[in-house]
Each structure stands twice: as C-alpha cells, then as structure tokens.
Image 1: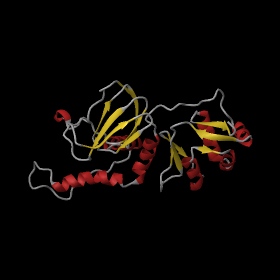
Image 2 (image 1 turned 90 degrees about the vertical axis):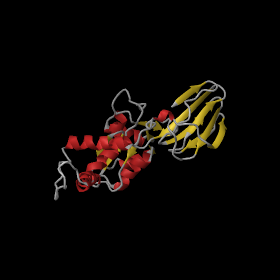
Image 3 (image 1 turned 135 degrees about the horizontal axis):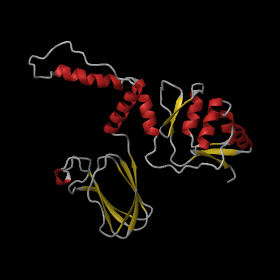
Image 4 (image 1 turned 180 degrees about the horizontal axis):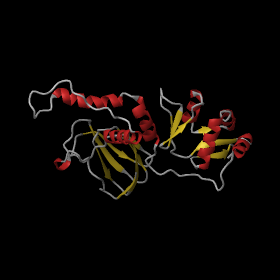
Length: 269
C-alpha cells in the first residue's frame, strides 16, 4: 500500500495480525512500536485494529530509503513529520476464516465430507448437549483436516493465488511448440512475470503444480523437474531445453507464455 501524508497525519495506534515492512519514500515519518502484549482496543470494540496509546519499545524516525519491520501483534503508530510518501508491504497468511471457507467450498464442489455424527450414549437431560457429543461433532472437522485429499488442493490454490492483479504479458500472437523450441535454440531465457507464484506441495498426493490459483497436473513429470519449475523465477535456455524433453513441461511452458504469465527474453537484453 502506498500512503501519502501531510505533517501530523496518520491512522493512529493499531495492530496488524501479519508481518509488515514499512519503506520510507520521500519525507520523514516517526514510528513507535510497542511490545506484543494484550492491548486495549479503541472504543471497546474487540474487532477493531485500533488500540489505545502504548509504551513504545522502538521510537525511530524513518528517512528516505529506510525500512522498518513490524511483526504480527506488535502495536505501532506512524506520525508524519514532513510531507511524505510511505510504502507498506504486508505478508498475510490465510486466516482461519479463509481456510474454513475455502475447505467448505471445496468439499461442496467435490461432494466430500458426507460422514455424519453418530452417538453411542445419550445425555442425562433431554435439553442438554453433552460434552461427549460436542467433542464428537467437532471431531468430524478434525478428521477432515487430517486427510490430505481434503486440504492439499485447497492450500495449493489458496497460497498460489495472488491478492493483487498481475501485469499480464500477453503477446500479439500465440506461440507454437516450434516457436518455443526455436526461441530456446536461439538462447532465449524464460521468465515469470512479477509476482507470479508457482508452488508445489511437499508429500503431495499427486504430481502437480499450483500456479496463480490454478492446478496444473503433471503426472509423468519427475519431482526434481517440478522443483526446478517452482523454485526458479527464471530458466536459462539450456535448462529450459532440457526440461522440455518432458512433453508435459513443454506444454506447460507454452501455456504459461500464451497466457501472459511467463515471457521469453534475450539473454543479452
């Protein structure tokens, strides 16, 4: 997030539940950071990120080019000293709400999670839900979370999906396999566009990659090849040619280029 502020400007003391990096552009801002202890929420609203004033453990003025890291849960407050432009980069892991919602959608789409609770005892009173029944019902959810078939696809799609719009690099005409082969023969590298995530899951039940929220099945591709594709944002022409010996990989790279998610670049450029 880019933030422009005039002197004394700021949102007030608040807490973020994710990692934040503050990068100072033009101007100066003073930042105070408190300890990771329970904070009094402003206005008594437990769901508000705003908190009452705190005792700082960090008190620093950021100037152009400076950066401040604030871990999750640490209250902080920025005060603008001069006309300033700041950049806030947040690294947000999925919340419990997001995980439950995504898993529920997946189970509904795949018609999974049909097991129902069965009772082996009854409570003493007709109007009581026993502790045993409560735990038994919640155990159904725990069982779901322990089966990789119920969560691996969800996690791969969720964690590879970008939260912002990517700058797609689509060409005027679609590449063919012959075009791709010729480009690599001429020494072209293949690069991801900025921000694109290509992920694989450790101990995945299937041979596949997750790219920008989509699943790409590669059942005949070795694990070490998947690792090269997911761990490198750029592949040299020599490596790309070697990987394209696997037909599935060549098709994948061609698809990513034609979708504008990857692009070819001259090494000398």
